[in-house]
Image (cartoon, rainbow, N blue to C red):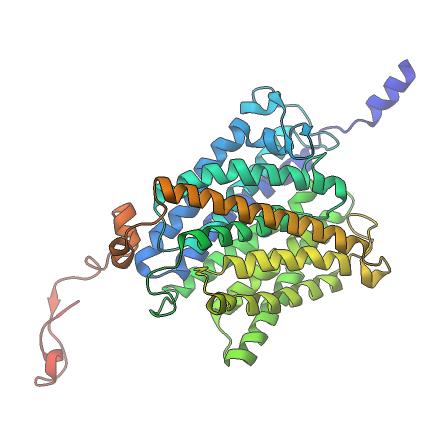
Length: 446
């Protein structure tokens, strides 16, 4: 027995400074995605809603951080109970975690794993906010964050990634969040907007992005941070899967952007900057669940297919009449579904596991497993989110008044505006236009 104990001790993982440092950097990269998302969404709304859109993402960094420490980490990654929820008393408030405790089976401290997963928990509900632009009370949104993270995200994270969770045990492949993050958030967005209704002027008034440069900046920050999101999800294991995921993230994103642009050029006659940014995000979403299972050529296929599907899907809101303000359903839910199901076709058996998809001789077995994970999470999130929105709407009210929505939610909810034009220049200046040319001959405000 003594010799066996010595052998087990020798084989136990030891702290790796390199892996720990890498995971801390990856955690910071994932965190910067939330401000990136805020800029991405903030540029897509009208001027009068810019600050509200930024705040709907930023508040998640405060609210979800506290929830995660108090009980979210325990619910998501604690000891399994009935394949539905986790719970470990030592994880509550992180009171029972020692700074040198290693996450079981890995070479990084439990604190590092916990903070990495915290960043996922922060951005997931923030994704929902894009569907609700222009019309939701900030106080109601904040309370929705608390309830949704507790009732939807924490349990779903356990299903997909927690040992003992039903999707984990079934064999659903989700490398970094196709089901737990993107389908979860996209389905939640659909559930909420079906309850709270459309914006004033939907399909009548122009609702174009007010700052495409801001959109492109946000998309760039998301693309940059996504390398931590995806490659970091292998937790620093030195077996080549993390680098494969890093490479596939870049490849799929490029393919999706090109596919989206080609689709809109054929369909609408132009290559738009909004299309380029949206296509890149669609590719990032689709490769998130699949990038550890497919080859680089498979990543091109995943990205291209997702780019076209998402570009087509964003127009469905006009056909079916649901007001998904910034295309959360069309990009995140549809992209997440595509990336998750395509594992069943393109899994090479040479990445994170030996599972092979249909095109690599594995038949349809994994495809049906992926379907179970995809539609199980989608149904739960959609229904639970709709119920939460309904209860909040009937109690404290989810929407601002029609007058506040029309005049601008920034002023109504935050008493601020994104751009102060009143102090942008000096006093009145004389026009250089010759006298007699209408109103231009008068003094104008600089």
